[in-house]
Image (tube, rainbow, N blue to C red; front, side):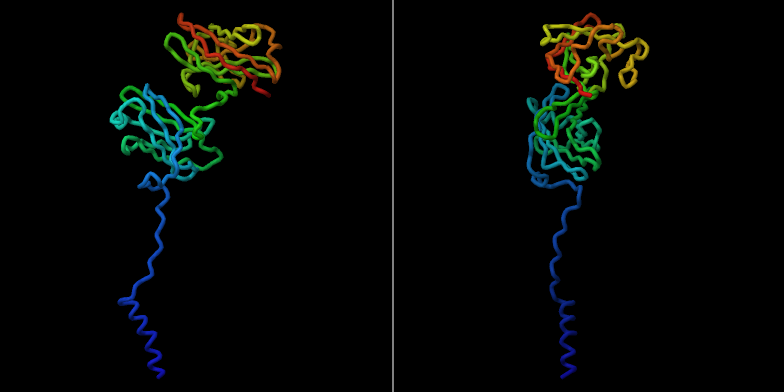
Length: 294
């Protein structure tokens, strides 16, 4: 009897090895960073707004949340031009922090139906993704534009120097300016640029002048000039002269004019900025100037 009892466990093991069914293994999750096979894999869609790049309009959609260290996805659709043309363009997309630091490698748009699909992975760190940048290359064209990730559709922000940004134009040419008012001394600093990121200076001769009209101060006007013609340093000591031209102007500078009426944390006024270059007059949009508080 003892011998028979010992045979039962051995037979059970042999049956399991030869013909018994194994327990099914649990399904493995897809490897992180892989390309999703279904649009829903990325999460809910959020329309970020419309970008204009190289004269074309693009509708930008964020798919799911964008988490540092994890792959995120975006969809770009054409507005006002054929989808077939969109698919012929070289387009790239990446994410940046609010201060303009690039936080991901560019992803190239891949055709998906009548849209382009992008994958980007923002790196982990002390800076959070704030905007997407869409770059378009076609022939001699190489342009880019950006949108915030929150779906608001456009950015409200200070300029890179802590001043107030605004647009200007004249003779079919458009540009951007940043005007900074210091509350403690009432002095003004002005930067001119071709782009809204202030990476390409819009230069004038170093002897040029820039006029600012303060609409809410009985139309009072002041004139800004370069600090000097050699380096024209800003208040951080950065030189701003390139080939006898500059994009940086200040008030009161060497003029000795009274700036006390511009002092104080509560000062504000609608202003208009005007200047000329090569015989062409330029004027800014009306905008509200408030001080940079120290």
